[in-house]
Length: 343
Image 1 (cartoon, rainbow, N blue to C red):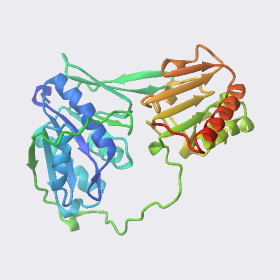
Image 2 (image 1 turned 30 degrees about the horizontal axis):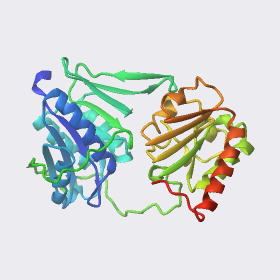
Image 3 (image 1 turned 90 degrees about the vertical axis):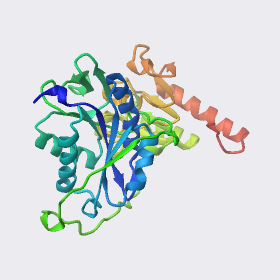
């Protein structure tokens, strides 16, 4: 393998029923930065059925090139068909870096492609950079229970690949005036060649706390003492019309269900306002909320790492401070006619 034969940064553009997943647009923003550093084009590769109209959106969000396979056999995601499509593109055009969203489909596809291409894959990456001199992707993620950040390199194989969690990167503002190249390829797979069939698509209609879309989140940690103390988190959230989140310790203690966990093994969130209450600020939690627009931290330890990422910090006992905040917000609601504004 001659590593110098590989050039370009690619992003897997995951789409569902003709709509591009947000993480793919976020990765185009991150990929644009990497491609500019390496002085190579940024490509997005798109697989599906009747998806040609999506190419302009991919270009508007930063891609120079869109590699596309449009075929009815790709209408629904299946590991086998999508993997063969990516293999066709990657072996022909030889990108040096491929990024995937760390979604169920993205993680499944990336691992299958890495196996067939005999290359490495860094999973659940939270930071991306490149060593320009050696053309190495620096994919970083928390390790050893979140106590350190590990930067993983793939020195001997290409393409270098990573999956990246949603909400960790930021999408560029779309530019409808950008011009790019669309490259279409054909796949020869037939339905009778497939070992799996899609019989039915069942949408999840269960009601879950959707923290990823919340504008205001009140998140509590073990610093709330016990489940009774944690009720203050619920009360504050109810007062200000926010969603409730918790750390891994809180979920493991049974104070909240897992779908309300924020952090490396939970949800990654980017609300307008994030309250971090009784939370020390371990890496595995911070990677899940550090891109919030405004972070308000309350902790009695003045040296708690959470203050390093906080916009505003209050040093003190959360069990004493939170009731005062609740009272103040209730007073503001009365003055504002029962509603709080977060504009």
